[in-house]
Amino acid sequence: MNLATHPHMPPDTHVPVMLDEVLDGLAVRHDGDYLDGTFGGGGYSRAVLDAKPHRLIGIDRDPLAVRRGRELAEKNSAFTMLEGRFGDMVQHLSDIAIDHLDGIVLDIGVSSHQLNDAARGFSFAADGPLDMRMESKGESAADVVNGADEEELASIIYRYGEERASRRIAKAIVARRGETPITRTGDLASIVARVLGKRGKIDPATRTFQALRIYVNDELGELERALKAAEQLLRPGGRLVVVAFHSLEDRIVKQFLTTRSGRRSNPSRHLPDLPSEPPATATFRLLSRRPVMPSDVEVRTNPRARSARLRAAERLPSPEGHVSC
Picture 1 (cartoon, rainbow, N blue to C red):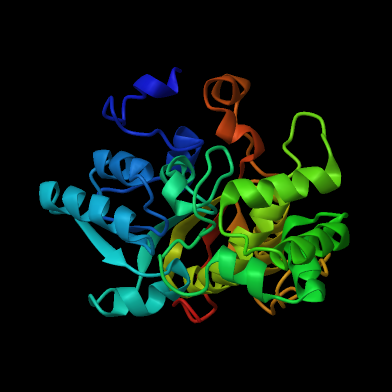
Picture 2 (picture 1 turned 180 degrees about the horizontal axis):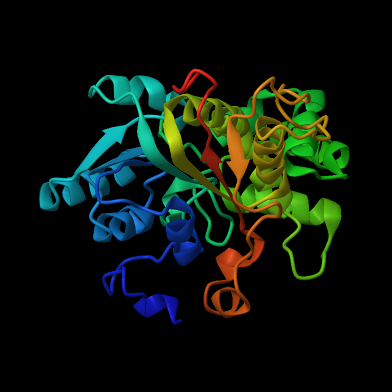
């Protein structure tokens, strides 16, 4: 299917990755309540609304995404848009008197809207301010690059970017900022390129930019909190669908769902402190032992889908017959 003309999408709407697979995983019911925890451009939300659920709530921390979501809410009474972090979904939903859901979808990472806006500083494809903040508040990537000491910078780049040359990159950053502050995406990309040289098809700055973005927005911690919140909110039979785009995110999701389904997992030193032993009673049933991958057709049409991995699970009832925290 041509994603640009997907039946769930208006012609001018960005089509999210693995849309059909996400809808299959959610198995939307007409009487169900659902959450799109990463609203972004609203692609998943529009497709879920087409299935006529009882209610859909969107959450996003990006003010521009919230604005788009509120425009959608004005057109569809079944949709509610909330501003905030998806890791705080329990509190956000409590504020509107919702304590259980039938499905949750999370698309982890940066959106195309953010990547394509040079002023947000997420990408080095076009020069812009070195920002990377999803909420446009708090510590920016420029603050980290110019303020962290060399050892801390190397640790951030290695841990969150899995960059083996992190120490050399950190040393070059510190040397350069001693002459003038690093405030532009193009400046940082040039520094990394001089350290690493050409690296095949992937730009040498990719891992460093990824690391800074994850660190600035606490993306791995946010994902960990969201998975635990989903476990609390989902009714028995409710579905959790997570689309991740790089290995650290996918490992967190895999480890969480593996242990929560009663299986043992192999924890990584890169991951937050998630349980490595299965719980006394399984809380999830895996819908697939392996991650669902995008089709070759989708990858050709939408290169962003290339690294996507979808994992889905169904919430099991507790022994007492109710959802436990």
